[in-house]
Length: 196
Image (cartoon, rainbow, N blue to C red; front, side, top):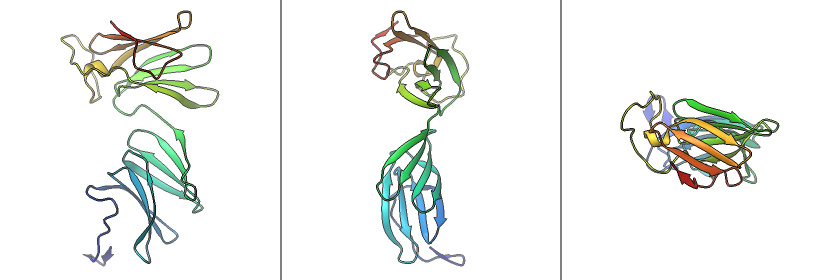
């Protein structure tokens, strides 16, 4: 807390690390720290009232009528949290590193894959992500002839294509190192059943 340009008190509610998001509303300070938590502080008593663990660095916070907070996370997810009950609802998810390279659809869902080691299954009617899987657990560089990337993941975890086969019930994901993983539609979020 500051008095003019002088720091008078520090609040250690987030332990070590930095605060990535901050919001003041109706006498309460809402802070999101590197520890993945949003802490609500009473600015008169400087005491922590509540804390909610999101598990990922909060990058934006907004407050709605003192009843709910909406938190934008570093992972590209937006979560609405009821302050009284602590119940969290995911409002939106997205790919969050590099580019989206793969896109396919079947009769009811859309599938995307990208540089962020994620394959996502979207329900267009509900307008939300209904499943997320890893491109690959293995971390490998391409030996040669890889595509450019804006992401920070290894080539084996950066997808370049996704294809759905409804007849066999499988999803194939091609990575930037040339590997292909196969998973079932039924166990979409499970680890791949085979790698080529």
